[in-house]
Structure formats: structure tokens, C-alpha cells
Image (cartoon, rainbow over all chains, first blue to last red; front, side):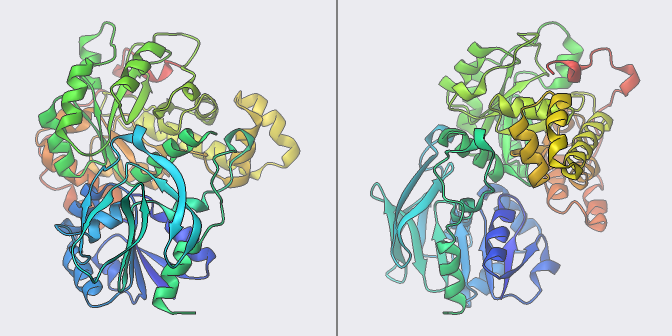
Length: 200
Length: 290
């Protein structure tokens, strides 16, 4: 399986590391010629959505990606990636998103929660995160909520989270860095995404 | 590392592959955001003007920083003086997204840096070699940048610092485990962090380039040397066409190894900032705080 990872800005390497551990092949998309390679799925990583949107349109990637996703290419967007999939952006997912919904960096937090189709105690790292304000059509389904807000959704070939499942894979840090409370081997979300491409 | 520090380290991860721009007004902040900055650094005077004005340089007026926070939706950073605990507390009180404990301002303490583990907001610190970088990380910095020589428009110092840090990392990786204790002693850095670098071949936090970046080519150079993103200070708003130059630098950081694209991006940018050569500098900011 070959997964395209949008690599314009943000935490794309972290996604690649998780996918590679799960046996998938990845390649980075930095411009149109990268995008034209064959692929089975697409990752839209965390970062700054304003930067990524600007670069997508400058590099002529916006329309090709929109068309591919609209015609069924499996896609997984995290944080900024979720914003890219929402209305007023790529607009392929029927969701309205509130940016910086938890405020500035002091509002960033870590928690665990249940996700429909994935399980319980899923680690959720929210970094200046958005959440889904409204789901705009019955085609899209909320699969996780935190404090009454929708933080993950699925619409056919599209999967989006407010939080960062890719950060569960951070390399373990020395003693003085220990105790962050995060598991380092929770790949359930990426496995779920790969199963969307080829059910195992 | 506690949970808050981990979240702060992770915000830096989200900034990777991006450009952080110095701005002095809400108007400049909007231009920077529009051009694709992944964060802005709010300060009253950019380093080139701090250099020109001389005298003691301090934290910016919180009201001015607030104005910039209201103008943009991207993260806003601000600088406090090295060792100035109270300035850092004030910046935390106005909910800044990242504090730069910066040698660009006049140091408030000639010996001690801030104990950054006591704060909830994240800190980025400058380093010109691996020892400095690891000492700042031990104090709680969750992001590192090269010091470079700010406000000069001369990239030579940022290049030296990035090359030195990378080569010191390679040296640690090549050592046997029993050599690491002596290496920690020489680097004047905690053994646990030295060991982390030995095992992982990189710093435990994100490492950006800063100090003297003025052109898309400068930014691409720093990325090719291993920077994970770039700070641009005086280089943008001291140039002829800030909006265009800023957008070009943003694209250069994303596609830093595509020389053809870099050539297009470097066209018609107007006048670059007037640089000061290394030999002409009277004040070496990089020598502040070790």
C-alpha cells in the first residue's frame, strides 16, 4: 500500500513513521509532480491550516487533491488536516469547523476517550486544536466527542480528527523526559485508516 | 518531562517546515499571516533597528503584543530578556503561545537562564553549539533555534551554528557508550540528554534556523543544512517588497531542494535588506547567554 503524505508544512514525518511501522509505503507531496505518482490514500497532517491552504493553491495542488478525494481517494486529516477537509476549504467533508476552538497554547491538552469503530482509551493530544461545530449532512458521522464537542468524524472515504494520533509514536525520551502519560505504540487510528483502504 | 512540556514540545512539531516572522505592528502581522507565516514574533523593534538604536533593549509593551494577538489566528511569540523571570511571567499572563528567551534583547542575568520548567507556556532558546542547546533543553526549552547574528542580514553565523550543532550530533552518535560520560562533561550538558542524542541522532526538541536569513536562497540553505524551519527577523520588513519576499521564503522552505523553483521564487523580489558583514559588527549578540 502506498500513501501520499502532504508535506508542505507541519508534522508530516510523524505520520510517515507510524504508517511505515504498520508496513505501508509513504511518499511526500511537496508539489504537483510528487502528487502525480500512484497512491492508495492521502494524509493531511497537522500544522498551520492557513499556511497549508496558501501553499496548496500556490503550488496548484488544491484542485487535483479536491477532485481525487471527491472521487473516492481515502483520506485522513488530523487537526489542520481536518480544517482542510471542511467547508470553505477543500469542502469535501460536510463539516463546519471552529479553528483554535480551545484558545491559545495554554488551552492545549491531553486526554483519552472512546472512538466508535476503534475502541476505548484512545490517546488524544489537542494542540491549539479545532473541533467540529456542525455536521452538515447525514452522510457524515461523528465518531468521537470530548466535553460535548465532536472531535472525530467519518464520511465514506474520509476520516478527520481534531487531535493527533500520529504523536502517539514519539520516540521515548530519557528519564528526565519521562512521565508524559502517552503510550508510544498506539497505532489504532492509522490501522483503522489503512483498513478503510483495504479491509483486512 | 511533564504533560505540559510535552504539549509544548508538540506545538513546535506543528511549526516544522514553516517560517516564523518578526513583526512590529498588527498590519505587518496580517501581511505575514497572509504570506504564509506559521507564527509571528511580536516585538517593538526588529533586530536591525535594535542594533542601530543601541542602548538597553527590553520586552515589548504587552498592549502592542495584544494588538498583534488580536490581528492574526496563527501562534504569536514574544521575546523576554535572558534570565528575566518577571518578563516571562508577564508574557505568560497575556497567554503568549511561545516565549523566546532571546539574546537579541539585553540580558537581564549574566549567569542564569530562566528555569523554564516552572512555566506553562513554551520557550524557544538560541544556541550556537550542542552544549548550549542541551543546557537550554535541560532548563525546560521545548524548541531550539540557532543564534546566528540577528539584524545583520548575514547568514554566515547561522550556517556556522547549524553546521557545528549537526557535526557535534554526528560525533555523539559515533561514540561508544562508555565515552558518553566524558562527552557530557565536555559539553557541560546532562548525561541523559547526551545519551538521547547518541541514541536518536537528533535533539529531543525541534531545531529551527535563525539570525541573518534574508532571501529564499538563505532559507533553502538552512533547510538543506538540517534546520526544521526558519525564523526570519529583519530580513522581511527591512526589504523592498515584504509581502512578496515573505511568500517566496515560505515556499522556499517547503521546496528547499528544488533549485528550479527556487530560481523562480528569487526573481523580482525588490531590494533585500542592507546587510552588515561579520567584520563590521560591533555587538555580537550570539555571545550573550551560554
